[in-house]
Length: 167
Image (cartoon, rainbow, N blue to C red; front, side, top):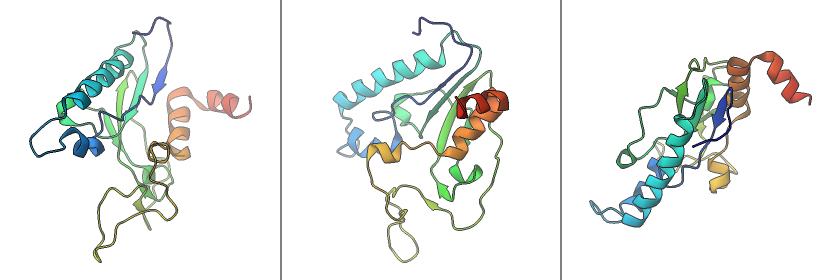
């Protein structure tokens, strides 16, 4: 649990062991769970919940779709980068406390592609992938500038955003 008192928390807790993308490692054999990985996932969940349940009036947590077995509470909102000016899909979940859901700021309607290859294929059987994307944890965890700007403007206000940009 956090010891300090904050007026707002916007956090991006590690998702390595909780994300649905790791299902193949959580269940290496069909129907058989990896107990070591489950233990790590439950530790990650405890950290996540310590942030979500912090004594703070405004909280936003961001993570990808979690594994069902982890048992996170239901998300407050699902967003995509294309809602905030980026031509990509990358489903992101938000858990909100004392904050309004983000409103789209710049919807992209054309030439939208997956940011990271998730194993899906197009009609020709080719993997969908952003050209030049490295499939690393750092690249996959990217928060897009348009999404971050929407968070700052809508939750903290333009005055706060201006001071952040020019400080």
